Image (cartoon, rainbow over all chains, first blue to last red; front, side):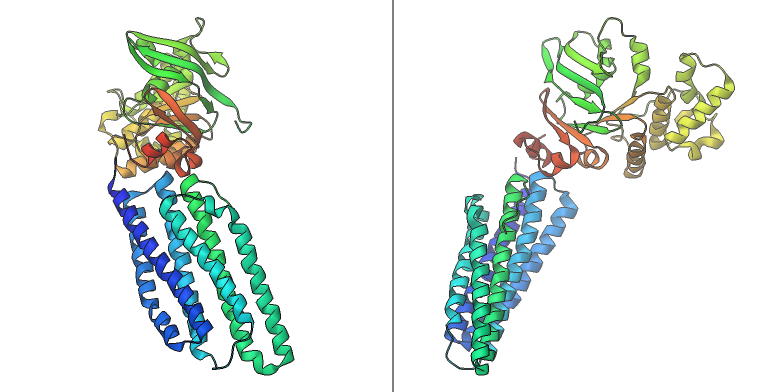
Length: 216
Length: 254
């Protein structure tokens, strides 16, 4: 039997996928803007923040209504808790994309140092993880999360590489300080996004099985 | 289970009403000083099951029971069991409040009198004590000799609980005790159930999922005469293991 709550939950699921795709693109495009030092692209990413906030608020309103009117239990309750976390995590990912774009808009027009390659590798892995989260949420298939732990480790290692390279570059030549700080900041934002992907993976597993796991 | 004391348990309990197989291989362990809720759609056997615990089904024609029901380790269907004494130990509160058409005092004193207590002072103490435990003393202490039927539905139900407590039971069976009550009276009964478990073992049948979740420590889900799933209430309502349980709790059937 389908219930009114099922319809409400399905509507929020669509919103989750919507905010997922939006935030994923914001992050991806912000790193592209960084790589190409494209300030126009960065501005355009920043402008998407309003839509990001709008969807997040819409999801929150719908979830509060579902909780107060239907008092969901068991799998319904877990689905709602999962979606609440996902809305939050995707919102943070989108905001981190916005923050990286701010960095780009303030960047001096100088050649990149080689850290930027590591940032691109990080971004690729984070983007793939976010995409996997969205797909797992759509398909109820959690097998992809089995190696999230290793993928998150890889992201953390890249972050530490960028950090130490930047320290070296600054100590060699202080004129690199501005760029290097920007790399470290951007890498830090990306590393946080990897954590959010793991957090969402944990919640999707919880939604489907009721089990609490630790992916990172 | 958790190293706690088992008060009532069943072993391969089967019950037939004529050709109707109403309980099928039910194995359940009810823990002492805990609240156990039984949930499930109408006709699933939950009321039939609690009625077995104080042999209320003996009164039903064509009712045939196989298997064991152990109360403190003793099979209650053994021939040497005194079922009057059993029902004193295992009291029951019904869906609709059913006070006797007597005074409030006499309703509570009736049971102890039947069991041989005649001393007025002793009865006074029992009545006061029982009404206090049922959280209704303050509301009725000045009109103990008014008719019980002058009370509101919620008060009548608490009076019935006091009447049950007066004969010093060990277990209290409650068959949808709040279904005829408004939310305020319901919340008083629920608070009372929470208090009662310190001293008694409570088994409650309820159609309200939220009520089962609020008041019980353990929950059993029954469907078509079978105990489908039994476990800690927090587990049953957060992550039941059986799909049928999940479907029922989330309102997909029933």
